[in-house]
Each structure stands twice: as structure tokens, then as C-alpha cells.
Length: 110
Image 1 (tube, helix red, strand yellow):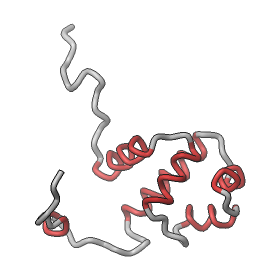
Image 2 (image 1 turned 120 degrees about the vertical axis):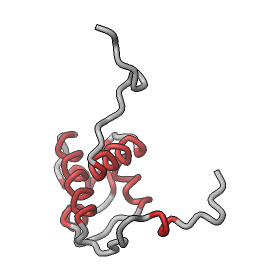
Image 3 (image 1 turned 180 degrees about the vertical axis):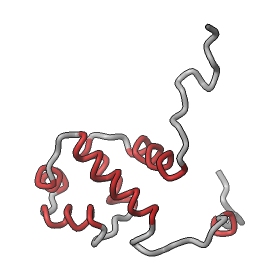
Image 4 (image 1 turned 180 degrees about the horizontal axis):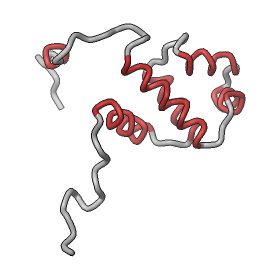
């Protein structure tokens, strides 16, 4: 896909909040913690899988340490969750959209 000349920021309806305390980032942090907990992992377990400290995981989950996309991908791998799946789920939560049905949007007849 060619993104030459594409201005992402001109597509935004609202000004981009670049702070670590944005509502969207808080949703991201909640989802990050929720996935860890659903997978039955403690912060210490996750830290071991990532070769990090429990303190590092805690700071990431509290938003004191912002994750970049490469680190997020490593978190997903440590969770055992495909990175695209995590991103799609997060996007649904951020947009309030419902997951797509597996039938491709077609309704079954009753």
C-alpha cells in the first residue's frame, strides 16, 4: 500500500492528544491489564516472560512508562495473544464498535 502523500493528522476530527494521560491511552492500559489477568498472569510472571522487572510491568500498566509498538508486540507475544487480535480488540473498544460476525455480516434466516 502506498502512503505517499497521505496526511494522517489531517484525517483526525479532533486534535490529537499526545499526552500519556489521554482517555484513549487509559483505555489501552485497562485493556493491557485485562488481557494479562485473563491469561492468569501476574506482573511477576509477565516480567519473567519479557526478561524485565515486575516494577517495569507495573510502571507500564500505570502509565508511568509509555510503551512503543515494538514493546506492545512483545507484550502480546508474552500473553500468547496475536498482536493483530489485540490491536483489533483495542480499536473496537476505542471506537465503541461491536466485533464483526464470522458470517461476514450476513444474517441467518429464521
